[in-house]
Length: 209
Length: 296
Image 1 (cartoon, rainbow over the protein chains, first blue to last red):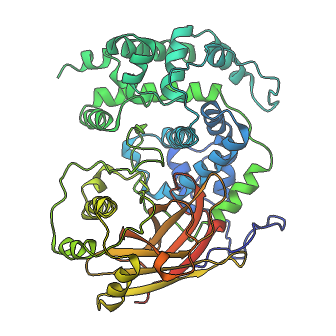
Image 2: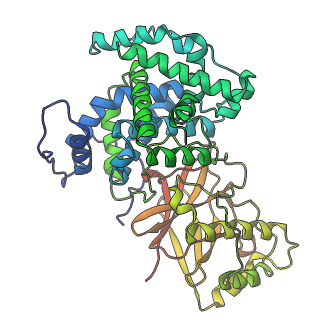
Image 3: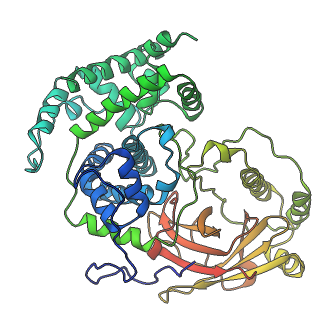
């Protein structure tokens, strides 16, 4: 084991370590979009190229999920860092038979963020965040790189019925279990599941247009 | 089983949204693996969630990419050996916050073993100077590891620690250290202070045969607010968190030594790092304050 760096964090300009070898990933179909298999191969190469691609292609989505769970941007950035470190460290254990790598990464992001939320004691039981937080996607800092497709999706999401948006918010972004949601909303467990189904069916319809 | 009814129930949606506790999620996962119809349905749901996540996409600050790459590079030699195979959104029900002792989710009961008969002898000798509770860092372990011997040992050590704190103490930690030092099976690992900013001293007394060890904290300054010391063992090149420490121990005399029992069968090195309360899954590279290599 190499000695961990002692003392203060690096203050020098960022540069590649001497032994870094940017590797060209095997047989890629295009410069900017890789298939799942290519992406996995790329990540397993552990090259800086791989990281850059991963960050640029998925950083926004992962950060978006993290930030919805952990509203504080400073903490969200820390979480995002943890997420990429985990993805990097565990890519060898990713099992393609268990599902898509995109989902795998999203789950790491979501779970890490929920962990952070819990460890910071920010989950407030009984307080349900307003529907407007999930329904209104108006942002003053719209990234100009984002395509009109994405904007279209956001509008679609804005049409989701409030009680469905709420269920998704509670479960996915706040980490409540079925049981907890049932208690918090004072509806039977079966109803919670049904609402979840309707929520996702509804979303599915929007996205398949 | 009625696949359609199962799909209609919304249980897959609950699974995909991460709203199921670990045991229920495991059952769903198993069913999904066994039924292609369920697998296909789940795939569609996960697709939908991906699209929904994309709707919330947000560009992180510009410099974050470089920062993250630096961290990845720095932690390149420290990799976590935690299994991470599942794509299910595992429930976090098993996680407890750092303020309580955390039993690990194993179903088997701890059984007396020769190593703990030995430990029981030690238990009878330990004084009441174990001032703080021992907390266990629970990593995200794959379900396969839950049944492992290693986990059982950790669980037994957790019970052992709680017995120690309950016991009426007769001898102090100094006396225990005398026994530890006299025990031919026990080897010592002196941890080196990596930072000159404060005095730090601790030793690990390790019994490789029994798989138990004691961290003797002689001197550690109080951690910064919101932070906690975490003890790690390096096994096969991967760091594994094995204990959280409460507070710092400022002792200048041997009698004040804090002894923290931990379960570790083997390892190449021990380290103490400063992490956020509750601990981390991998040590923060520039927050490792003590490190000691185990002699072969």
